[in-house]
Amino acid sequence: MDLNMHLNAPHSMGTTIIGVTYNGGVVLGADSRTSTGMYVANRASDKITQLTDNVYVCRSGSAADSQVVSDYVRYFLHQHTIQLGQPATVKVAAYLVRLLSYNNKNILETGLIVGGWDKYEGGKIYGIPLGGTLIEQPFAIGGSGSSYLYGFFDQAWKEGMTKDEAEQLVVKAVSLAIARDGASGGVVCTVVINLEGVTRNFYPGDKLQLWHEELEPQNSLLDILNSPSPEPMNI
Amino acid sequence: MSKSVVEVPPKGGFSFDLCKRNEMLANKGVNPPSFRKTGTTIVGLIFQDGVILGADTRATEGPIVCDKNCEKIHYMAPNIYCCGAGTAADTEAVTDMVSSQLQLHRYHTGRESRVVTALTLLKRHLFNYQGYVSAALVLGGVDVTGPHLHTIYPHGSTDTLPFATMGSGSLAAMAVFESKYKEGLTRNEGIELVTEAICSGIFNDLGSGSNVDVCVITKGGKEYLRNHLQPNPRTYTSSKGYSFPKKTEVLLTKIIPLKEKVEIIEGGDAMEE
Image (cartoon, rainbow over all chains, first blue to last red; front, side, top):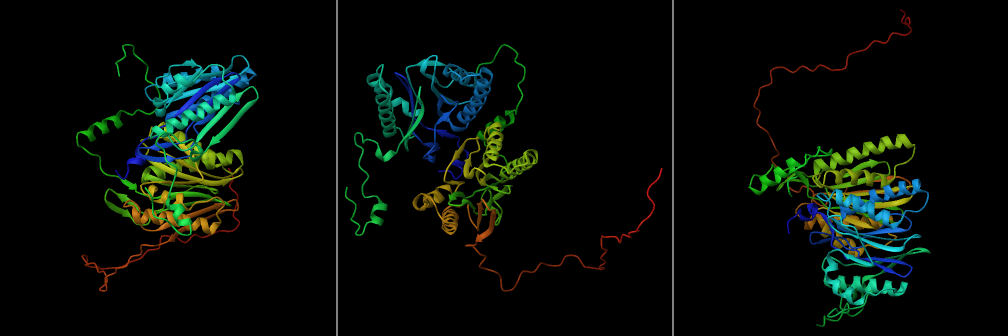
C-alpha cells in the first residue's frame, strides 16, 4: 500500500443510510464507518446530522461534500425559520438540499436522505441521490450498503407500522447491510422524529443479531491476555 | 461532460485548470519536482483535564530526510494547537493563516478563541481548494465549552473523536491507541500513551522518525514539551573531528559595530511653525 495513499484519498463514507416513515413520524438510521481508501478513518462517526429541530439529514458519499452541503442548508434554514416565524417544513429543507446538490452536480459527490416531521404533512422522507433528483418516498435507502437492501425492503416494508416496528426494521436492515458491505460497519444510530420531538438511539455493533455464517467473537487475543490460563485457539 | 452551446459567464472561485494539466502531465510520465512532505505520525487524545497532542519530527523530501528535527505542532491560539501532516508548506501556511484570523477575531470579540472556530475556518479553506492544499491536521484545544479534539482531512471533512491519529504512521499509532486508550486518563498516563503511539510510528513507519514532541493543553494553560523524548540520538562522531580545507587566505580582519552612538538632548524647544 502506497505510503501516502490514505493521506490523499478522499475521505468517503462507504455507508448504509435509511429513512422510513411510520404512522406518526419518521425513523432515520445509519452505520458509523468512514473510510479513506482501505483504512477506516473513523469507526464512530455520526452520519445523521441536524438541520433544524424537526428535520435531520442522513449523509453518504464524500464526507467533505456532505458536511459542507449540510452546513450551508442548516444556515439557510435558520435564516428561513427566522423570516417565516415558524419551524421550517421538511419539504423546504429537502428543496434547499436539492438546489445545492443539483446546481453543483459537477463538483459534489454526495447522496442524502432528508427526513423530518412538520405539522402540515406529518412525517416525510425525501431521497436526494447523486445528481440532485428530489424524490418523496415512503422509505428511502442510500449509500454503498443499500445495494443489499432493495430486495429486503420490497418484502419487509409495509404501510402504517408502529414506531417500534419501524425502528426494529431500520436496525435490522442496517445490520444486514453491515454484514455484507465492507464499507459499512461500526454501530447503528437511529433518530426517531415525531410530534413529541426527536429521540436518538444507539445500537453497538456487538449487540446486533448474528446473521448467516457470522460467528460469535471467540478467542480474541485480549481475552487470552486477561484470562488466568490461556487456551490455544480452537477452529 | 458535454459542451454547452449557451455562453455562460465565468463563475468566481479558484480555477483548477492547471491542476488538471499537472495530472495529465503526470500520466504521461512528466513528474513535478518532489516537494517536502512531513511523512509523519501525529496523534491527539483527550484526557481528564484536557487535550494532549503528539508528533514526530522528521521532514522528508522524496526519499531524503531534509529536516531531522522539525516542529509539527503549530500554535493557533493560546489555548489551541494543531499538528500538521502532508505537504510541509501547506500545513505551515494554512495554520499560520488561520492563527492570524483567530487573533483578529479575538480582538473583535474580546473573548478567548473556541476550537470550533478554528475548525470551521480550516475546513472551509481546505474545501474551497478541493483537496489540492495537502494538509491533514489534528486540531486540539480547551475553551469555555471544554476540551475538544478534531481531525481535518485535505478535502475538508472533519471528525470529532476522543483519540485520533493522522499521517503515514497513523496505522501504527492507532493500533497503540485502540489497545490502550481509556477514558479519564491522568496527565502522566496520557503523555506516556501519546509517546508510545508516536514511538510506534517512528520505529515502524519509514516516513516518521527522530524525536517525539508533546503538547499538553488544559484549562489552566499549555505546556509545549519540545523533544520530550529523543530515542534516536546521533551515536557516531568521528574521533578525528571534522575539518574543512581553508580555501581563502585571510589578509585583514576589521570589525565595525552596527549600532551608532545616539546622543540624547534633554529638554530642547518644542517645534514651532
